[in-house]
Length: 105
Image (cartoon, rainbow, N blue to C red; front, side, top):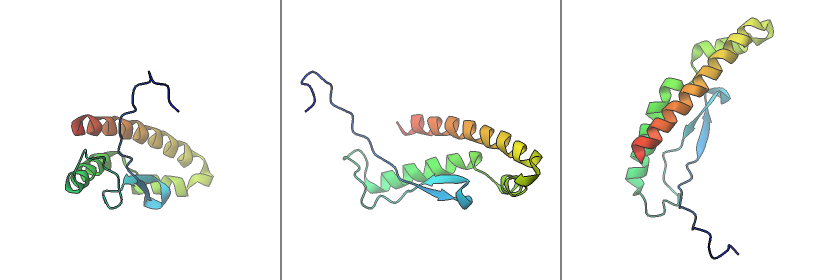
């Protein structure tokens, strides 16, 4: 049992993700069916918010160049280039996600 002087944990909406682009990226699932929204959002508001976040995140997703670099990985040089691109995309993804979270809140 939690101690009496501990503050209550804030309620959070856990947003499921799904893998896209052959495992190179992920996307948030906008379907509110079966989700516990804790009364913070209506299902249409949740769907709209998640679709907006997914749209914002498009700029940081992998594209055909990344796939080509990964496929040619046995040559090692393309794999190093892919690693550098992937690192930049992850930094950009984090920045865009934090911005989308701020807009949502």
